[in-house]
Image (cartoon, rainbow, N blue to C red; front, side, top):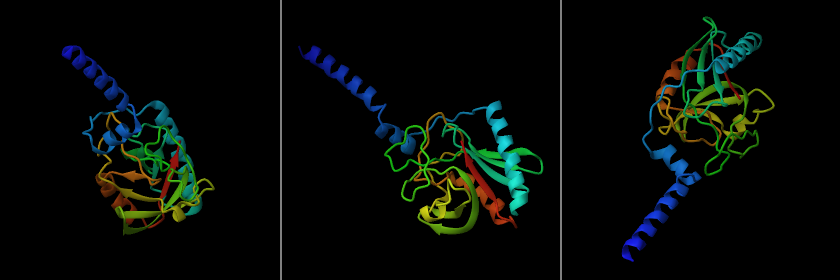
Length: 213
């Protein structure tokens, strides 16, 4: 009877573990604390085609609006969060210069499944659209850049305190798992922010950041 009881308890424990591993609590715990398996995901032709289309439109916008015509930042939120989706695009060479990970907003859910977008103050969601990268400051998450939404879909960004900053929970390289989520800010790794800082700080004209799906 003891053996049967132990087997029954073991079976229940396995079932419980299997259930818990699918919960949002488990997913958030893994994203925040568990070691990540590094991977290298080839950029698909579809992603490159979309990136080039956005870059062409961004270059025209930069020329017409007086933004930096040498470089811009493009974020493709349709990609998995563990995959490079923050792109530094070189207008002059018409090529991708570098890429890194970036978090999306959790809409103040414990763990957001899929994607939701909102421009509402207090929503905690990512807002799609073009942004002007504003002045730097040191705040809750350390060194950050203010963001100014340029479209009707993100024109509350400044009021929402949606900023470009880094966080230690963002890995430096692509990973197999999902990464941590933000409260609406495009959050990058400390190493990525270190790469972005001289580009932003040395730009004589405003830099464009465009989040799209």
